[in-house]
Image 1 (spheres, helix red, strand yellow):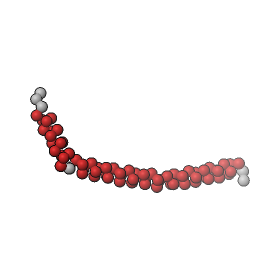
Image 2 (spheres, one colour):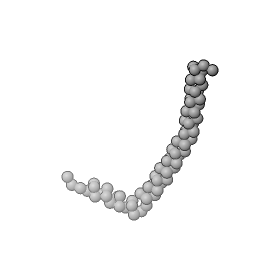
Image 3 (tube, one colour):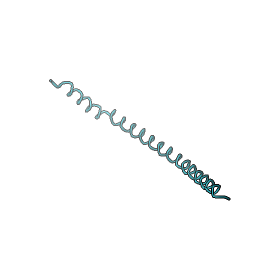
Image 4 (cartoon, one colour):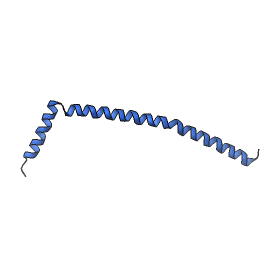
Length: 72
């Protein structure tokens, strides 16, 4: 095998390792996004429950009323 063929063989092997490494990370990134989306939805649901509860809703309405009653 001449020097050029050895270099090409090494380059093919390197390219194969790079492709394998990239493919291995693709699932990891997708799963991280999935966990992040699930956490964001859970946080949004919790926030919705808190903001629509009676006491918090009354407080928010009071803040808005006071803000609208301010004279300029």
